[in-house]
Length: 606
Image 1 (cartoon, rainbow, N blue to C red):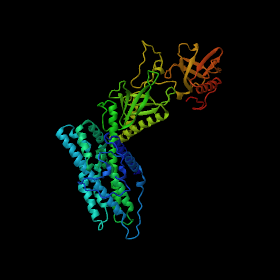
Image 2: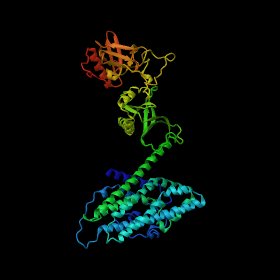
Image 3: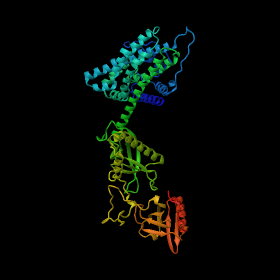
Image 4: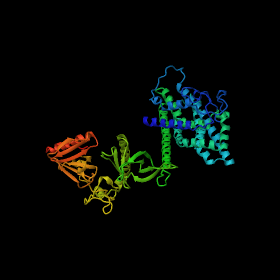
């Protein structure tokens, strides 16, 4: 419950920030401190006028409209974010019969703030809303629907408080001597406070429309200015008054919390008041759920705008889990290409940035369903921090910018996959027959061709992986099997004592190329095999290492080393000194005739 409370307070604070950022430029602060006279938890305001009376805020407040001050907004955020007022209440023991009841003071404050609140609701619904709606109908200068969206369900909220909540509080306080309790009243009416969820959910949209049409329509601005300048508005802007319903439920919770705390241990209202407090908290959570849903839809809409609002991906049921740039490892090109991913709860959008970003920022290249997706880490020395995402539509080799980023992406993918699988468990159990386990095994054995394969990169193979004939540009061109992507390799790291790319220096290598995939196999530990590419099935050079001497190269480069015996000389260059050291150790052991005794004995590969 504590975590949910903190999330709710953070969401309300975010709405305060939205309101602060959406203030109209004409309504600048005049230097007066609203926070010293309005909604301060420690102050006891004088009795407010009735809902149909004009609110006289005082001559000191000035005659022109002004917005909420920055100090007040920051104070409100701090109060909402503080957890001190949520600490468990301890009953107090009062001594002395002549002592005035402190709980009655709190009920009096609840009634007075409710009277002031209903007056504000009257101003919002019967003045701002009705006059703007009437102006829209008469002039057609701005749409009626815009006015209705701005004020949302404020009419329902106003009627509830003016016709039910405030009269009930007034009657109970008038009869306080005979019936000193309010818990039962709040319990009866608290469920209706969930209507605030709709208002809070619409608040950000309302603030945006208000700012837009204030600037766009002179008549709209004229009506606002006239009302805001009157005594009833207290020289405050419409934005300020619209914020009050957002603050009201946390205000109820504060006052009711204090009321429960002040009640004597044996007070007859204690159980009802505690239950009422729980119901108020439930209403606050309902508003928080509305805020969360509003934020989710807002984020989703912004993503869709960046993608060009393509019809096949715009779906309000989607949830954005993660987005960000990655590098795509190509099977044709040597350098990775920058791409952008949007991971939703049900799909991955693989995108490329648009060259001319007019409107949409990205173009969707591939959509991959999360259902059936697999993700795993790639151990690739050439492309560190890489991982594989395999789905029904396509398989992608991706590279993150750091190890932490790679782990974060993999966790996000796995969480999305786990959620889909968990959701489908019920359907699988219902559809599974008495031979369900056998059917599942058969599906797994027939998976070939149902999932997009991981294609072997062109530079990793120089010959056909089936017949071992070398490729050429005319009669033996490269192609990939669309079902499996490749057929296997004899030079994988788990089958070798040592393997990596080494640069081949000198004329000794002939036309084999400047770099080779060098392997000392586990099942043939005294021979070095050199392949043109890691996935090749046949080595172009094999060197029996027994009796060779391993020496430092003559070029002065610490990464260069040589194999020398009876006029035979092979020169290699490793990518790092550390890799060179491991190769020298592996070759020296093979040259001395050493063989591993155990499966993992002597493994020097990464």
